[in-house]
Amino acid sequence: MAETERSSADRDDLAGLLPEQSLLSLEAYLDMQRAIGNETRFRILHFLTEQGAQSAKELAQELDLPSNTLHYHLDTLVDVGLVENRKRKTPDSDSLYSYYQATALGEGILEHGVRELMREEWDLLDAYSDSSATHP
Image 1 (cartoon, rainbow, N blue to C red):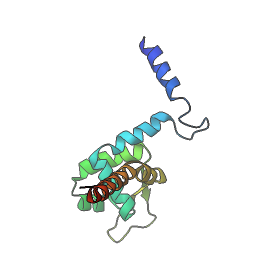
Image 2 (cartoon, helix red, strand yellow):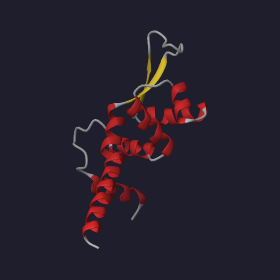
Image 3 (cartoon, rainbow, N blue to C red):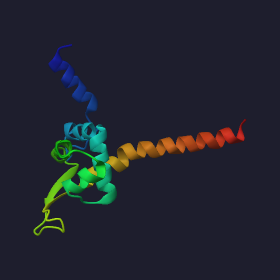
């Protein structure tokens, strides 16, 4: 099968996954998944959802990341829409105007993606340990 035929067939197989009037394309959703598939980006997004808005300086300190590494990963998260860079009208106590926060999509992809899988694993382990305790 030719490349163009295969990609067209692949799209047909995926038809119906998203509503016709979807705000995001399938590619956009996949870009988000790829972004948090990186451990550093996952840690950044997780930290932002747990701790709230943070400056780059605070993130670098809390996550023990060099500034250039942090900014590379923050840029990726911002590009796919999982994190936003906001500006304050007045500086905070450290004279910083800029901060990062998780978007609703960022919170959603963590809560209904990776974290849900992690919870399911805990549930399965609990169920297994309960059943093995009653069945020697």
